[in-house]
Image (cartoon, rainbow, N blue to C red):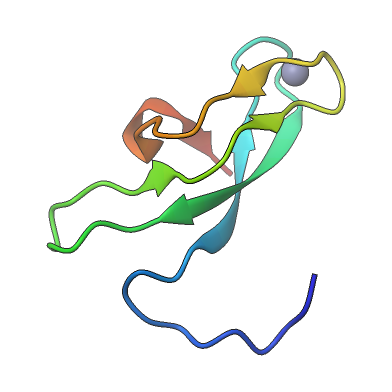
Length: 67
Ligand SMILES: [Zn+2]
């Protein structure tokens, strides 16, 4: 994972969410929407390292529990 990515709209951000199944930490990339009220969405499938739960791409971030 390289640092120094430019912040800006359309740039996926690395975010940690809480696994809904086991409560473990899942690192996901989230792409924010265009508007201020737009919810970010996961841009790729990421699985929980503990239980294997898959947070699927396209899931709105407001349905996830962020840390
Ligand atoms: Zn889990």
